[in-house]
Image (cartoon, rainbow, N blue to C red; front, side):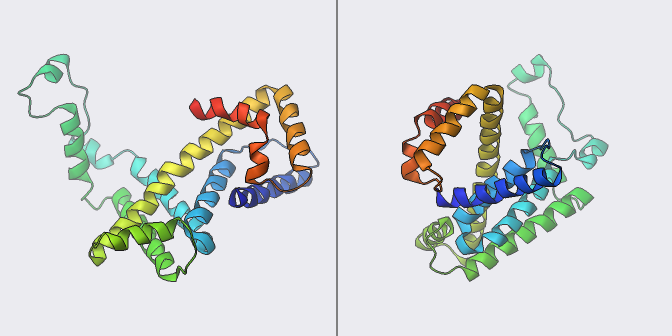
Length: 237
């Protein structure tokens, strides 16, 4: 909770500064800010004192995600693109190329060609790999998620290359699985509160009553019934 509060405080201060600079009123598009907040929390949790480098990894992973999601020009030129199969094709057990097989063929074939998109993705992948291993070498005895991953890798009796890939893949999975879902959930919660100002007032008053001007902690969070009442259905949706 302390890590989340520290990251949230930084975000709120940046919003307040932007509002003051604009004269007291400002429309803020929060999508990128919420994603950055989510990445900051994950970086602090995963990498501890090396979270600044962790944020660099997040930015590289975002670039990598955008690079691999672009349309494959080579696939369009060569005709190795996913086509919609007819019902006869889908129902045929003897057909060597179902839609899934075509997709796999296209992906495996095109990813080895030195296209601009592939070269960009390869470069980003190498940078992410290098940054994560640098943090591993610099890591001390901090009790963070990276320490747990390192312990798991060392206890698995893997070779050096396999252990490095295990660590890098797990860190990448944490980012990809964690930051997007967390950011979307937070944005959804803020939107619902914006649609129901009466609940905003209840939550604000509850936070003031429970915290009394003190920073939020896990014990205070347990005493916030309205906050839990609002968040529970949002987490389920």
